[in-house]
Length: 150
Image (cartoon, rainbow, N blue to C red):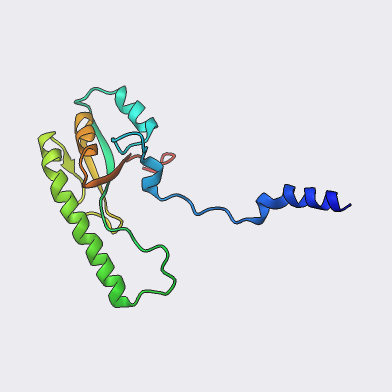
């Protein structure tokens, strides 16, 4: 009987542990083996396009990482300081990729980066590859609607 209880405990053990936190969006698109900072699926779709074809992408700019281990709430002043730091870092990163976008006849589709440090860009496929090389960029994903909700 003791042996059955032990085997039952081993069988149920995976259900006793909470599921891990979902990955951050940049982890979903970053392939550690690839310097391109795009998903393999997106890279495959790009490979089927002409280098002068224009596409819309969402660029994740390099911004300071938040402190995920922090237990206490931020004060309003601390939150404001963090938001300002992210905005400043995102603007600086955007300024570094702006010449690449212009060189490839692209267009930045929003005036300012979001609070998450993202900016929509319309650019050529060749421009996407060049933006990927910038250390001001964390990741690039396709800017697409979901299920016809464009």
